[in-house]
Length: 302
Image (cartoon, rainbow, N blue to C red; front, side, top):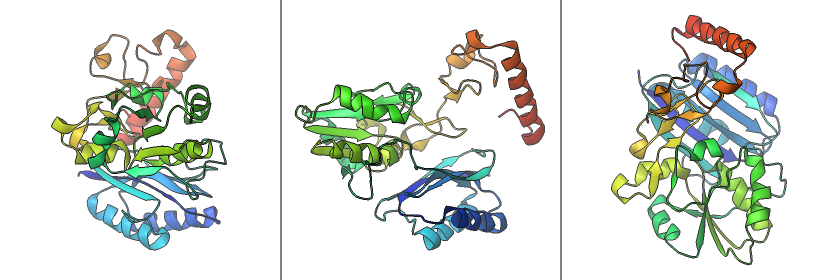
């Protein structure tokens, strides 16, 4: 059966994380048998991507609305749907975190200030402005899969590297207009808040992220090139949120194009051309044991 996938976040104060985590597990165990994916809970709110059969997802969405006020279109909340042809996550997890998206900059507080939201229908006009610097806030392995025409790629390995890159490469006295984007919007909440704190005056971000843009903007009008990396077993989606052809190396987590997967260095779950030169006998043994575990548990390699 097809799975409905929901990428969501909401910034809101959460005081008793343990109690909320237990409440979510109690509800899903009894009422949402097909749920999978991960929810992250922090003192600043909730974030995650979950999937379930459509009827089960409706049940889960109603519960989250009643419990947390997480409804599509409400303030400081994003709830984005797509679909997967098979189960996109192995299991369901609810994890406690210090931050929803780790930046380690307490001055970046989306509950107090964020950049200006730009709807997908208005995005092309904004980034066509020659005075606008277009910034991709995602990490290097994500930008390999796809990006907007003319975007600046900071080539970060992790999100916490972005503030240093901004300090070294951007100047609020020179870069008067900055438009940024990410997969679903949450990283831009933190990044835009940080930039406003550093004196940047006109900071814009794509509402709903790349996912909403790819859903709403026809391919023939799009300025997006490639696919969008997603954090589940689909690996990527394209225009209309159709599943893409990318894979991921389960040994090193690098995205692999269809051509990459045909290379002799690629063995599912064991190696690819990015990591085969560092594959030790001990590492290979561990990876093959993991693959056998998944095959025994789920009936196929994962």
